Length: 316
Picture 1 (cartoon, rainbow, N blue to C red):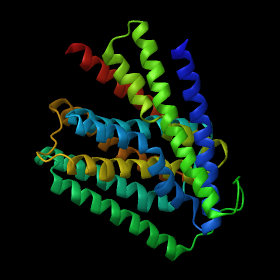
Picture 2: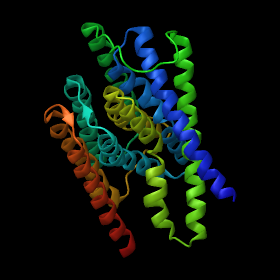
Picture 3: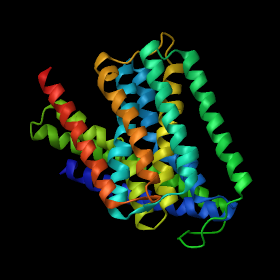
Picture 4: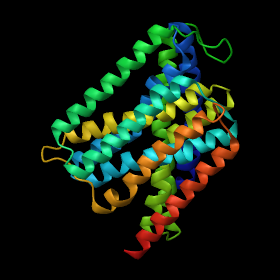
């Protein structure tokens, strides 16, 4: 009974949080004269990445760096192959050029740099500081291009108010609802899986892995339904950049001895993360629209990734 209530509460909070963060984001774009792409890649992406930040910091402070790095890398894989796929399946997503030439290329660079560091040295506090500086640089680049383009947000869309402060509160409230909703749903689903005697490895690969991407999924689904493609795409790409440079950067800063990726992650998962960052670019520039067919292909790749990973785990 309690597990059922946790699952229902989690789903309800995710729905309300997704609605709040998208409506609040659209309202901020209107009130401040910002493009919705900016709101997606900066504000919404940070809000939806809050659960990853909490999990990663707790893992590092608890002496479990493998969980911290696995959380970041796994989240980036699922965000592109699963969350973006689901958004495209709900409604084909129109792509703004800045989402490719500025944001997706920065995500590719962040993924490439992460792979290079992982293969050559630990993620030391010094590396973490550089990552955080690069995150600050990215935000500055986004602000500069916003200022130069002076892009006007589209007239359509739903917002609760033209007041920037009100919409900021709605956005923050939506992000909080997403975080708690994800925690309730993962807790309830994990408990249910345990009652059904599902192996812990399966729980980790399915419930927990997808659970860390639930806020991005909820926000992307609502943005797709509300026809706000800039927020849908910006949320996913911005979240990926924030995960690597922000969350992994914080994890490294908090680890005096540095963080080394486990061998299996260096040989397998991190390359899937890099491949996801590469594959998504031609998908985005093809007719400047992410279609349902492309969403299906991305989802198929994610199923393939989980299948291979599951096969590897069962052999251990």
